[in-house]
Length: 493
Length: 95
Image (cartoon, rainbow over all chains, first blue to last red; front, side, top):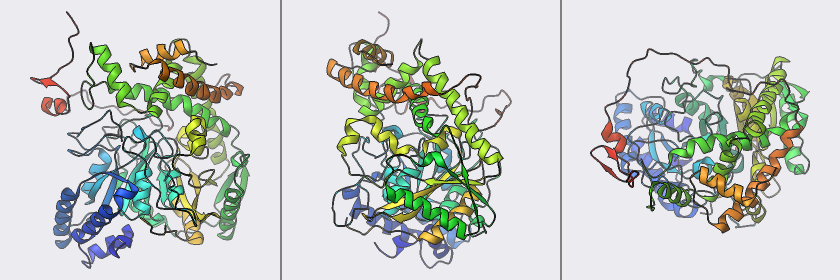
């Protein structure tokens, strides 16, 4: 790791503006770091070096003339789910083989408009379906963290596993990610990074490959809280091309970091105290409560009675929407085509070969729950349960709670190829038990590194906020960051 | 509720995914694990509860009904596995 790649976004921004460094130097340092590490970590599935240096050169020109944008010259990694013009965009799936969009997602366009530089496209679970980055067509990503005294390869979490590893291993300054059930927050927790899933509608979904449209929301993964605030401000916007994008001003999130939290009310939901939860996670949660007490916040015990139903309801709603969204991949308009005896045979063979096991499972579950005779029993019921989950949160906030503190994940990172999880798809789902409620209710939530467990692996705490009150999450999570400090993986790769 | 192997094959047909017998058997096992997991939703009293249609309280924006995009046939067929004269090419559908 060179000195340049150790800079946070905020630090790099300062040095670029002060002309102490150039974007070309910074970008080249990252390209060198990627070249040295990617074979081992597998975070990037497409590296756009020439394009990055050309962008960096233009950034340097703008910085020299004093016309730099908010992210001028900052090299970022982009999750493969975001459409990037002329560049690999495959949702880490075989079925989108060779797909290079002729358009740009709104979020990445916002980043380029602000002067950011793209280093390449990041690995992920196929179509964002997974919690370990093992469902990628391009193979698993390795977590830069390893347990003390062990060289066993651990997962970085998923689906934004490439984003989390690239940020934690300093293979980009920061990265874009997406979160449908926990896909930003769980990998952030597993890699000692900061991940925020904004309120549904805060960031445009236009040009982001759709998984479950009523749950999908993009956000940043960064090395610290300030970087998260900076990047989210650039990603968020009103977008007329996304009807669910909200017309609300984007606050200066950064300015809320450091504000006092005195008198703010933090809810502690008793339903998040799960049977079989490791003591270390429980202790971390208690530690978080103490930090907030010390900072002058008021701790309030609350109840979110429908919590346990969020995960089963999610595994109806998300596959149902996915089965519909993924119907478009049929070998006709883009990507893979496997020839068949007739058009139907071509569809069936293309989809059988193009989709991986996890994606096929979810398409079939979704097709089943939406099929004639089952719609009411499954999908309609799940959407009703979703209303109840949202009402639990509404009630807590109406009672004066400002934010809710929970663990981010029920464990720290586990091994690649975990046999129990491979044998039972439901085991893998349980990774998202603390994060999925938030997607079901459309709320914003952030995962912040809060400590290391006895194996020396990072663990995160999650703060859940009120709709469109991301600025309060930045204000509040600063308490955790200040108390816990930051965590760096020891370089072994 | 659980699914039998014929249901798995029927659903795969609906989803346009070819599955052979081995794969159907594996999928039957996986699908039943998931359906068993979601069964607990039956415990919830959803009487008089409205299904969620939007996670966030927003009203759909309206706009003037005018053409805002188009004339980009080249872009649209650019990624097609087979195309000719701005048409997507597929195996013969009608004899």
